[in-house]
Amino acid sequence: MMHRSSSQARLSPGSDTEDMTTVLAPRLAYFAGVARTEHVTRAAQEMNVPQSTLSRAMVRLEQDLGVDLFARHGRTVSLTPAGRTFLASVERALAEIGRAAEEVRADADPATGKVAFGFLHTLGAETVPGLLQAFRADHPRVRFSLVQNYGEAMLERLRAGELDLCLTSPVPDAPDLVARRLDEQKLRLVVPADHRLATRRRIRLAEAADETFVTLEPGYGMRRITDDLCQEAGFKPRIAFEGEEAETLRGLVAAGLGVALLPPPAVPRPGVVELTVTAPRAVREIGVAWLAGRPDTPPVAAFKKFLLSKRGSLLPA
Image (cartoon, rainbow, N blue to C red; front, side, top):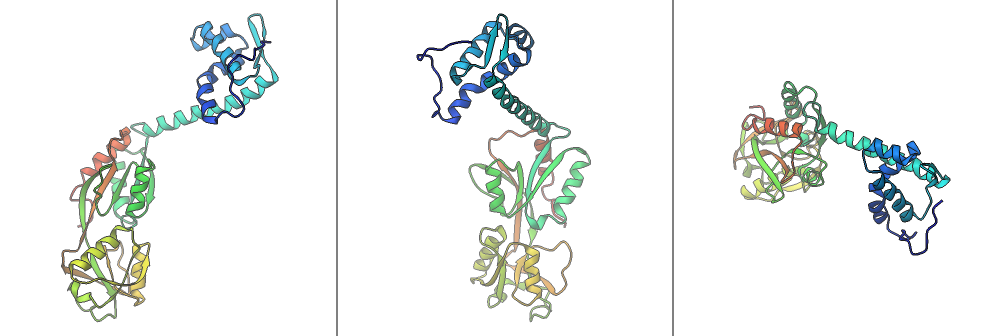
């Protein structure tokens, strides 16, 4: 066995885990190779590295750990009890690294890779399924991780690297994001079926100034649009209920609990009447956003190109 003097450098028990990892990580594959063959020369040949490099790496590894990992027997070596314990953990770590490498390669594969795609709840019933169906006609094996959320939450996940692309509204304007307008969607004033305005087909929003509104919570794009449109119409909406999902708001309207500005439903909802707003111009813009400066994998680049080709035709007429 090797014996070390107190002057030899080693990591103390109090060293940071991050520092330990930085020191040890480059030598772990070398250690596993030597441990597997129990022969430095043979391991060096198999890993295509100079034997001297491998020998020095093993000595430095033992010095840094302050533990003998090998017992030397001429040109062969055998693991000490500490070496066997260390090898078990090293093999698990290397296997995990291998799995991670395979996963990221698979996600970037042009034919079978993955796209993490976020979108608004109100686009989930018709718009997004139709987009995915059309895209997969030419890219049948590309996989998708789908996230439905409100706009600000999706932009946070975009910035955190959890999403590649997202469909959102309003179209964001931020220096760290790239956003492109794709389409716009008309908004309607939704009223109960027995409401005084239910016999109308069109309405100026100012005519609803005295109504009680149900809206999405602050932070939702539709809430911001509702507040802005009401302000443009000359009033601040009196809000009775705040929710998280457009169809829930339609249910509240059907129950007579207020009126709401909403995009058209995927399926007509009984108990409500949807009025065209003639003034102010009541629309919401839908756009696609991604993080500026982040390179795209081939499947993400293909889906981004597809979405941009849908400008003006993203939503049903």
